[in-house]
Image (cartoon, rainbow, N blue to C red; front, side, top):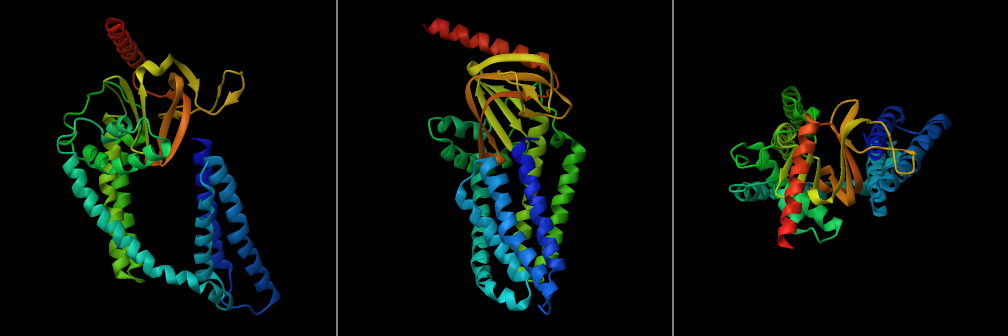
Length: 351
């Protein structure tokens, strides 16, 4: 797991633990110095500790925009309104005015999903490949920000394209695959049950506050069944394939990378410890490796930096090398070498 991902998970767990402690430790009213001290400590955690951790672990480590710091302040303000003693919580009353805009936003999201589903189905009817591959080709001369946004939008038709076998019937076949946990049938069934269970629990909890919000949120979560199915089929059948002159790598549906085969400067078959490796200076560095297992068995070195789009395209990252755990490394290496040789012959003939 990449360091940036570990830090994100660490912050998420820290934030959840902080808010849970706040709800359980804070008194209903301030009647003595001890309760005031507890309030001061929790307030410091909400509005000092968590923003600092967010700045260091998310913004700095993940190279995110500084304005996103407002998100954690807004969330802490909402938690303060709900958990602080009444005489202090009243100062955060303005947060509750966001209730109606939130409902409006959820309605817009619901309408957008309905429209995007119809649009995605229409676009996927005759698609002969992953829509995201076409998006990357179309916006290859644009900056990463524009390509990331395009990939996020393309994830909708891509989900339907992979979730329904009839849509992907003309997909390029692949004789190799990355060893991914999401490609296991039992994991797919577990994710389906988890999605449906989460949808049910959210409806039961939110219906106590607002049935309208409960229905909207529940339907959005239940819609995740399409993504879960697409994630399973991509991981099992289409995690690694060659399309025309490109090597397409799907780290499930979450991560996406296309590489021009001519830009693969070095391809090695061997064994590398996934925890660390040596860079050109001889010092240890963190690996970017796709696949389950202790050791990677394929190493790709690129002649120029490639853009790996993580989190459905929202977290672009420049990489110069990549390690894979594949089912048949020798066959993959041979396929790429043959394809590279064919490209060189075409270029020679053109000259």
